[in-house]
Image 1 (cartoon, rainbow, N blue to C red):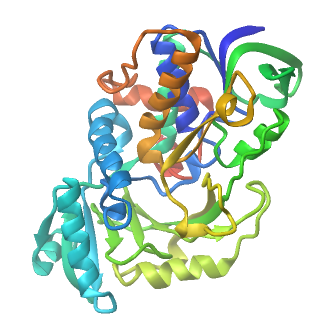
Image 2: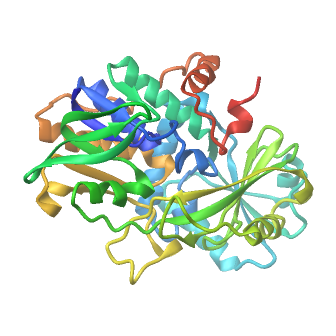
Length: 407
């Protein structure tokens, strides 16, 4: 089998890369070892960041989130619940940090408004008693399985081949050039020849890199999410403090998702899970939302962040930037025909995909520009269709299975 570009990894970023390139007229094949969004994307908390979370420490990253938040609300409304968000300062939080957060948001251009606590309680009656100040921001909720499936289906409509449940067994090199990969769909092993291979495997990028003979220093961290039956919350809640465990509550219909922790792991497939992390979610998130009941847990799941650093001895966990990195292995390692995209956030997947698309198009001599900023995703005008696509792909994932698996 031959293709121009082989994209490995069927999360939001990989599916986004396939869509971006297919829309430019490039012949693309997308392979994913499991189901679409089955890795990091489908095991996230599903917060569509406004940028406010990062405004104090990473204003550039916050600005990227703000831009992509606005784009996705326009091109993917069927994958998003536009809930808005609150940053909450409790009695135990530094009041100066709340002001720094507000000022940093203003400098980035994030629209905020200070909301009287009693007014906020009228909107969200279950806010915890210890809440003392409220800052409103344009956060939202994104359903990652829908988003990834929409990108994959859109790529297919533009001519891409989709090969889920297909694992890369080897990367084929001829001297200093990557020329394809050997893949296995469970019943048949075959070679796919490609002019360029994109490594979009996220936390598993180092593993694929090693097959190609390049070293990619990943620094993945795991985090727990706890989905709890809870009626009535309509707004994303964030704790107004430096990023820490249990500082996000994401509303779904009839549920909330509590998150999250940050624990360094060596293997994104094999890591310990500790029930103490679940207890910590209730302890911390209850400072923002009252009435959380451990007896009403619907599901618990851990995700692994695809963090990348060139200095893991110096940085770890929450110290590592949530920005993304596009690794050109020709310039970096002397290996032609291979690029890797790592880091980033679900919110910025489209921007990441466009960066990869621009890079690969330049290498292939393709002049067609990216059109993903202005082109709505498939199903945007027919919300029922997106869940038909999800069911077609068998793409049920814990981040949003309560939404996508509804009859």
